[in-house]
Image (cartoon, rainbow, N blue to C red):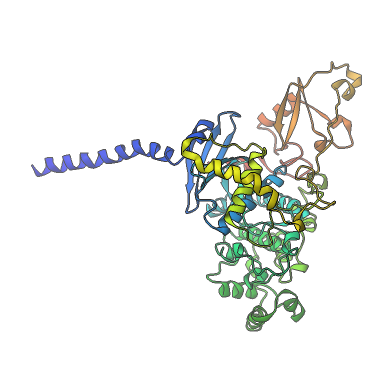
Length: 527
């Protein structure tokens, strides 16, 4: 009898998981608003944290695979509201760069507190890739670093500092394409100094999870924020790719400074004075005096010479002496991929539509964002107003009067200001026919019927040929059109020793050599 009871008890235990698994999909769906489920086909949950959930989904309208991020109570306090506002506005400003994650859509939640963001889908991030071991080969690391430098050069040209570059904010797919994400801590350099002394940025001060990638001037609470902050982070990321673990895994702010001062050559008194004063200066001098310094060379002893050199030129105590993104792109380490015409810049500073030198109220950020969305923010969508969403109607009504009074005169547009769309250097469109392309071969001109997305750009489908956009064209007009059969052969052939997918962000003959086996290994390991 006891055995029978045990069997019955075991059967009951086996039944429990099946009941839970049946209910779990519904439970997951209950976390998503109805208007989001109508727009997207939710496939699976990718992750959940204290601040939100991310799902993999398919856009029912466009059929694109996207990542839907639900931010819980996005405007719960001034700091969270400011981060949400910054991320959305900056991502829209940088949406045309191939190495910055694209924000496809923005959706309000019915409770008027949460917000949904629709991003392009990426398979994983650099943190997970590094954590899984020897996935990346040397050529992958070089290409990843090149793409990150391209993205950093782009945002720096708009006078914006990311301030939170770290492996988990570097999205990557199995083709080794990289996208920089999470602009919640980004700041416009212009806005930092336009409002006078406002104290340390609370958004950055309270955020301690990125300590390992912080520059010394951030650790000692210096107000002298420069673009060198991002360059330091890039040096830490490259170093982590090279040795497979964080360079400076500090357990506290003081310990972080100790580790940095032990690795770097001892800074001069002039360098210390130029970076920090007061307590910060005393702390740095104390650590410098008690440390011999210079262990970074030993830490990177197994890395290639040019890789070690780039890290050491990025991890310099004085931010004024660090490599800039522009100069780093000319470094030997990424020379196989460097081509200036594929490294665009912005033509004007990127400024937020609200003051960013100090924190505004929660309502200021929420109302301004909803006001912009109501005016036709790219691909934004609003749930229909029902009786259960009276607060939405109230917020929308307030935003109309808010836009007239929220911007102080000092922040009104000057004669030098331009709109977000004008800030981007957009190539002029040109029209060429196949007849002009090969006049000696009497090829009948064909009308382009659709866009073919390849090599980081949209290519026009012209029958048997693809026409490159102007950004892909060189001086030789014979490169303007590419026969489809040649493209297909290169994709399907297993005899090619290299992956050559043209210009504009993929591996190409002019960029260097990435073996097919290396790329296949990377794709396999990320599945």
